[in-house]
Amino acid sequence: MNERIILVEGIDPLALFGVNNTRFNLITNYFPKLKIIARGDEIKVIGPDEEILLFENKVNLIIDFYRRFNSLSDENIIDLLNDTDTSISKIEEETSDALVFGNNGRIIKARTVNQRLLVEKYASHDLLFAIGPAGSGKTYTSIALAVRALKNKEVKRIILTRPAVEAGERLGFLPGDLKEKLDPYLQPLYDALNDMIPARKLNDFMEDGTVQIAPLAYMRGRTLDNAFVILDEAQNTTMNQLKMFLTRMGNNAKFIVTGDITQIDLPNREDSGLVPTLKLLSDVQGLAVIYFDTRDIIRHKLVKYIVHAFDKYAKQKAEEKKQNQA
Image (cartoon, rainbow, N blue to C red; front, top):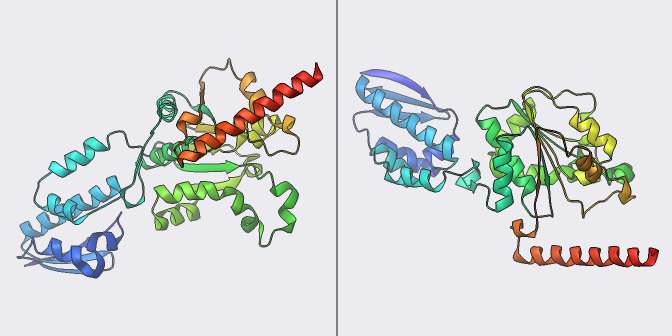
């Protein structure tokens, strides 16, 4: 009889062993010649060498499946133990265009024409502008691309940033330290990451700097190498701020700038630098601009009509202003 300790890495032990060890028992039943003891992130196995090797291979196969699809069911475990890959092949077919597998196996992929265009242009451009209305998925798709790039080791870190416009006027009146004051403005970025990365892993990434979320002002003076960087809500930046941000781009970096030119929150709308910057860079090679519209809105069906109504109102006001000036 031989003994081996197998480390459980890259998977939450609860996902592998199940509640009250239901999945652990499911696995051990396939290896009656082995004595198997699980403690935390270790599995102690006692028995014949060839059986131990087979057990280790099966456990690694199950863990690799979880790492890939970010989900694991009893049926998946049974298929992997029985060497039947029909259901696995079906999953691969259904998810061939997935950007990432979110928490609980949620498939995150480009679902509209312009979301798919963003993914397509990403492959051949290092700088992208994604412009469009709220709810069109421009930021969410961008973050999914960033998580995929990190997972595939295309970059070493993800940096997400936003201009904290309201914070400029009201920061001193909010309770807490600087991080607590700014976090509400960055919450949508946290929400997207929480959909795509397990909580414990995301916390580790945040602690070691692999994932950074910070206000735009924190970008000044930095050179961002080997990073996937997203500037969200860029309509609330000035031209100088955009210049500062875009010139942070270092070697092996991917930059995506998202914005909605109909939702400028600056005290003076004319201070927004997004539209002038797009015009200024229109002839620059190596960047692409994707314009999202109401067809890309995938929130509640009413959101599309709400956005359309407000756009119509804004156009009417602009026409009235022109007529009054004439």
